[in-house]
Image (cartoon, rainbow, N blue to C red; front, side):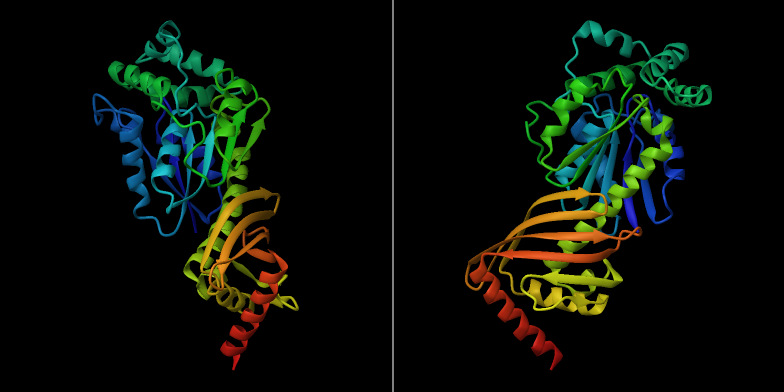
Length: 364
């Protein structure tokens, strides 16, 4: 079971995710964070919410999650999501940022913020603003979104404008979150434009961007099914890679096996022949993981049903090894094929001899 922590944006509530959640597969669990001052927490807010306090509160929802989670944030929620992920890297395997705003804030001048501050309790203005920012919202969707925002106090709305506009002081040019990131935005969003996105995506070492033509600022409402499909694929990608990394960290046969299809095949430069079958591959990798003195995954890229993980390691009294692992997944996200390429040659030969001896020992 995979878990998503969903963090909504300015003037919304947790119900903004309803259509998207309905389009997710049954094996994807969701937790929704309700920002104070909106929705069911209209009366439950502090006078001075900050990105830091919001992220700390949202992060507590991960305490009860078994394994890893993916944090999904939209607009203002994207700023909170990044802070949650950087504070809890042991719990977060990936980030999905929908129509994101910069962590360092949009930094709009005061006169440009006046229309946003005046939206409190003004249903007509809110509906018009949403229609301008998301041109393909239906009348029903506009009504539903407007109802979510009109109950917020004027002071709450004004304070949240400052939160997303000011952002984090001295936000780092490169994010502290080094895991995989999926950025989704609408091609017709006049707020999160291509220029704004171009200042956000490069901050993440392993990010890719998806643009949904015709989508606006609430693209996750306009195109809920398409966004849900993209998130589901991202869940499959990061889940298999996270399970793989966890298997090496724990040196656990069971942890490896949980990520494999029954007919998984392993090829490696340190093995004379391919290894087939979940139990056999898991046993081989558990033995291999115990050889490493240290192992660090340094880069990760996903393309279609394949994931590419670059790594470096030490073994045999600090002998250096480097390599690339390729993981292929089936439709259910389970790993069906593994290819591990080691270098340099001297370390490969030493590793091949050692793993042969260890496997012979476990089979005797």
